[in-house]
Image (cartoon, rainbow over the protein chains, first blue to last red):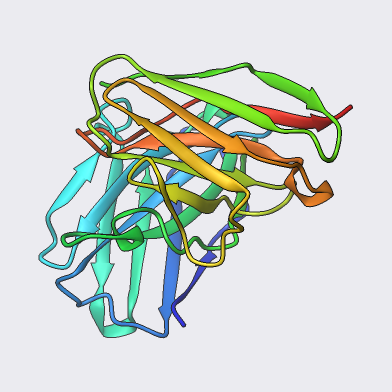
Length: 124
Length: 107
C-alpha cells in the first residue's frame, strides 16, 4: 500500500525558504503513471493546490505561487521535495504531499493517497 | 482559473437526517469533479470522483451527481462520523482548484 510522509523544518523565518520532503513507500516515484504534488491548508482555512511534478521532471504550478515554488524529484531516494522561497506569515499552513494519476480512468486520477500533513509556521 | 463555490458554508443537521451539499463551478468542468471529506486533524479523504463514482470503501449513503457547472453531494442518512468538512475539487483545467468547503455540524 502506497504511503507518503512529509518531513522538514516546522519553523521558518520570514523571507527564508521553506523546504519539505515527501518520502514515498510502497511504490516508485519513477512510475510514468503518476504526478507527485503538494497541497496546503492554512489553519482553519481551505485547501490550496501548490503544484506537482511528473516523473520526467515536468512541473505544473499554481500561478499564485509559481514565482516562488520549485517541486522536484529525488528518484534515488524515492522522494520528492517542495521549496517555497521568500516566505511570509501567509505561508503558515499544513502542507500535504499527494499522488495523482497521470492517465487512465478511476479514482487514481484524483488525490489519493495523502500524507498525514505537517504544520509549518513562518515566524521570527 | 475555475472558481468553485460551495453552499451552504455551514449545515447543521441531526444524525439520521439527509444532507445535500452543493458545488458550483465558474465554467464547465464536464464531470471532472471530486468530493473530499476532512475530519479535524486528518488529511482529506476522497469520497466521490468523476462527479458520481464512489471511491474505495466509501459507504453507499454517499452519492454524487451533476455535470457541467452544478454538482451535489448527498448523504442519505447521517451517521455520527459524517460530521466533518467537505470540499469539492476540479481537474478540468489548470490550476487545480478546490471549493472553500462546507462544514457539516451536529445540530
